[in-house]
Length: 76
Image 1: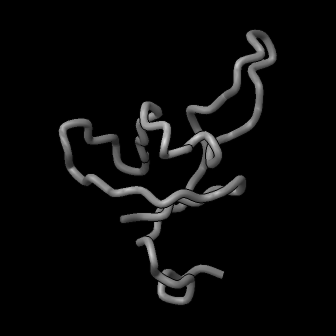
Image 2: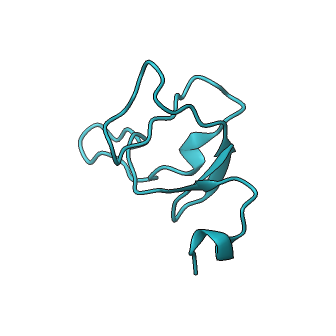
């Protein structure tokens, strides 16, 4: 289990490393289809200026082991 953190929020999810959909190094992929895992609460809340659709597909995040304290992760 990992905790994905952004400025907007955080969520705990199971991690799957080197699976069939391996993202490029430095990127994280979280599927949107599971309604019990609200990843949109972590992503950006900005709107596209032309379509007015939410820009929910990208944002900067930190990934840490779930349950680990910030002291063991080097956080502030």
